[in-house]
Image 1 (cartoon, rainbow, N blue to C red):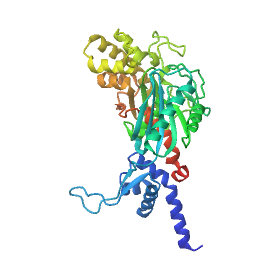
Image 2 (image 1 turned 180 degrees about the vertical axis):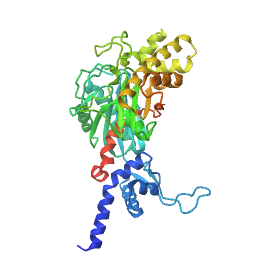
Image 3 (image 1 turned 60 degrees about the horizontal axis):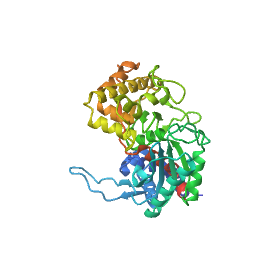
Image 4 (image 1 turned 45 degrees about the vertical axis):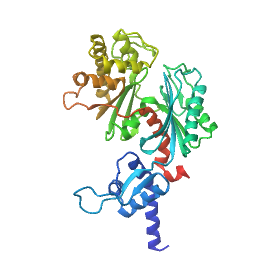
Length: 404
């Protein structure tokens, strides 16, 4: 083989190995132009162009070779890159204490279609997951889009490698339910192609926020959130979820923040899980719990519309202090460079940001020497988007193999 042929083969192999990294850069918005892609990949312009062209041929991105130049700019503008809005999708599903939701999600974390589900979650996980998959399959039939995988978010620690939900405390599901196997079986039975994945809802919210939301650019991202019931946490290190040796890391809901507080489902007392969730907030306000909407929505409505009410303010301050104490302990242990808060915690931060930041600063070792940015999550349905990220990961790792 002559030197020119060897050089061409090497260039092709280098380009193919760059397909996944290039797609992830476009997917996360970090490579809006071919010039940025070239710099980020550390390849020649010709190689970056070939990689972009290959991803376009696969129906994953679009390349605008004739973008308009910005006013006052010099020289020829670089080709613009964006995900293909008509490309393949994944099925994303989420189950929580107040129902479920199914969606089709494209590259870039963009929701194409969504279908909210039931209000009451049945005690049989197979029945619930069958219903949520059928809702997703209906969306696929209506859209006519190609599906390349499926992801599920559940409000429970998910043990690896078994894929079992160890503590679905706020669902009536049995502990240790094989949710990954059930979900994969229902996905296959519905004729949906591609692999199926399952993960903890807060872990997946953190992953979505890191790639598309408030966590972008963080190297050590801590996410703490409370949804409809309970409190969860997650850590993203250098772009990857830290799940521990068996998927059970960052069970922050069982940090004790009030030793004389409410009994917790885990057998302890005064855990974040029962001291800083919507039920704790509504109980502290002394309001009746209405059945019309979820506890989370009732809490949001009070914080947004009645914060001047002394009982609401006192309840909010109580939860902020408990949350701040828990966050300070996590800062001391994990040393994150950013904290993002979701669900009711986002609302508490926005209601009184200075109080929360002051509690964390006062209780953490390094709080007075720079502090850690504490920001609200920014994505709607971030656990759902995170479930989609699980399904997109094989494509991001190796687009050619995943789409073959």
